[in-house]
Length: 451
Image (cartoon, rainbow, N blue to C red):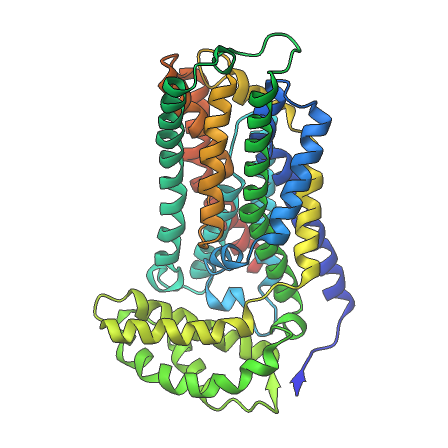
């Protein structure tokens, strides 16, 4: 049987506070990022602002519920195993405060100045900062304490996706301009008059696509943060999946297979904790499992197996074996209850309905030297929806803000109107400084609070 630690007043208070922080962050994410989805339909008067944000919020809601959890845990695994799943929950409070406080503060600052900044960037920077702060706290080398392979994988997705958005949207606009000759597509909005039938329908369709795909990708990020909260503070209660009972008998046999892999490639920098954990997993008794310790051991072994998978010394057979073992162990510790999905969807959907005006104004009038046209908005959003949805179902976190902003810039270049250098500079500076600033703040906060 599983052993669960009793609730304490302090745990419940901390859980409530961190729930509030993660809900506020996702709410801010809604009105910060989702403005990208409603910008074109509002700016072109295809929909009234209230109707647009309610519809976008609903589609975000559906996107969260329809999405998976691969992005959620792709982000979560940026943290070291001992912070990600502490057996006694001790590092949870500093980790959560550092993470939410840093990401929320930077999100609000950029929103206040109307700069389309990425919530994904904020979260990833804060997660990296916590990992670095933990390395300094335990005087460990950054090479062994921080999962750089996972970080580079995430950062590559963040770096490549805006380029694809810029080129893809610019190319689609070029094709559209040469195939569809309707002049209304290429004219900025005139007063309060909405575009005619099919143009309006196209813009509503692209708004729907971006909103849904945003929910399926960004919504997963909040699912990961909520799971971090409840697992970090109450690890004994939420450490394992409700279906863990059917997975636990498989753990010991898989640990036996994993042990020689971890031992053979220990020279690649695997921590001693991974070897100790695999030894404990080999002795796992399904009838007497301590949930929090089992979760901690599984994550230590998963971190070690990930090193084997990325090792230049490992054979293809060993890499495949490491991935297969990881695939069997993960369902025991990686899950999301229905109410976590619902909470994420509600916060994101409600946030969409508030605070959109600053970002809409920036996207509509300040990125290019001319105002946004329906064809430009539709091209940027159509390409953006495809990229975001694809990333959401492949486990890669991408930035809706980066993709849509880059897409609009691409259509401005494609039309020959050019880009507003002053606004481009502001956006570029926000993109460049987000990671180092959030990393530094989160690392410092975690180190100071944990001491």
